[in-house]
Each structure stands twice: as structure tokens, then as C-alpha cells.
Amino acid sequence: MEQPNAAFDYRKMNVHGPFDLIGDVHGCADELQALLKRLGYGVIENRPGQTLNSGPVYVHPHGRRAIFLGDLVDRGPRILDTLRLVYNMIQHGSAFSVMGNHDDKLMRKLDGRNVQVTHGLENTMAQLDALPRSVKPQFEKGLRAFLKSLGHYYILDGGRLVVAHAGIEQALQGKGGDKVRAFTLYGKTTGRKDEYGLPERLDWAAQYRGEAMVVYGHTPVPEAVWVNNTINIDTGCVFGGSLTALRYPEKELVAIPARQVYRESLRPFPRATV
Image: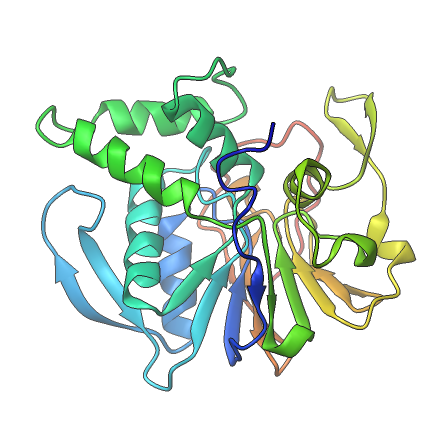
């Protein structure tokens, strides 16, 4: 059975840039705000309170839009502030976001599904539990609806740009269903575990020959490198790396170094100098 948002319309062919694509945030709101400022975004409103639509509303003065590549939640220190910021940008029309596997797991948890509260979800649940009783039920209701609204991937700019959390092979672009959903959330895996107990991944980008540029995250890398018209811009901010954006169509990378190591990675993460 498909997930609630599996039939989400991925076709945004008539949505054109310029865009600023942003890798996995994982609750690193300090670095996200610094990155948005570096990219030229400004705050047009700052709403008080602790609701989902509280906090700053970021907009670019020249109409650029941010595209978040998923995994907004878990592990980091300011998860709810990250959700507020991205929610407000999307509501204002200055951003899009795709679903990450951590976002999907949180959505299932809020749905009452039996999921393990591990790999950083415990941080998200603790921050939700710290909300005042007068705010928490409505916040979680709005958050659940927000997460369900996220697409698993988008085809943008006349088909020249495809964004997905863990990437997407050429053969799957333009399609839907459980197989596509699984690929966009988790990438291509062997079904086995590696020595660290994590899914053993296959390098789909090494075989990619598609004309569309694919920008993705999910697997943290010390620096973003182009491979066959694809680029992974998850540079492991929450693990002490950096938060990276790709300016499109300029293909310019902009990165903000992490303020600290917020969480140690189960798989050793080599940090690059930004």
C-alpha cells in the first residue's frame, strides 16, 4: 500500500529558477539561518510564540527560492525552529521541500505507527514533548499535515533539474509508486547491513547517464562533488561538517561550517575544511 503522499504531483516542469538547493539540515537552525543570510535571504517578518508558524519568514529580494532536500528533523539542537523556518518559507512561496527518510519516520510516528525512536528521532520527540501543553497538540497536528504535503521528488525547470532526498535513477524519473518512494528516501541498497549496522548502499550516481541534473543528499560526504550530472550536497552539518547549498543554475556551492559536532556518526565521517 502506498504512503499518503505517494501520489503527490512531482511535476513542476513550469517552475523555473533561480533556486538555492540546501542539503540535510537535521535541526541545525543556526547554520541554516547563517546560510540563508549568505545566500541573500532576509527576514520580512518574525512572529512571536511557539506555534508551527512562529518565527522568521525568509524571502530573497530577487525572487530566488530555496529547495530543501529533506531530513529537516532529528539529531540537531533546534529541530522545531528548523521546521518553523521551512514551513514559513513554503507557506510564503519562497521555498519547496522534498521528504527525507527522517521526516517520513517522524510522520509515521505522529500517525501512531510503531517505529523505533532511534537514530535521532528521540531528539525530535524530546523537543516536541518540551512544548507547552497549550501548544503541543496543535503543533503536532499541523506538523503531521505539513509532512504529508511533501513530495518525494520534483522535476523542475522544464525537466532540466530533478531533486530528491536520496537521488533518483533516470528510469524512475516521471514515475510514482512504492519503488520510486523507497529509492528517493533511501537510495539504492543491497538489502544487507555494513560493518556499522547501516544499510549497504550502491553507487547509483556512478551509472547515471540522464540529461536532467539530479541534486540530492541523504548520505553525508565531506564535500560536494559532481558525478555524471549528479551532486550530493549533504555535507554532514550535524556531524560537524558543513551545511551546503547549490545555487542553480549557476552551479555555485556555498557552505557554512558547523558550529560544533552535534552528533557522532555511526559510520566514520571525514570532515573537510570549509
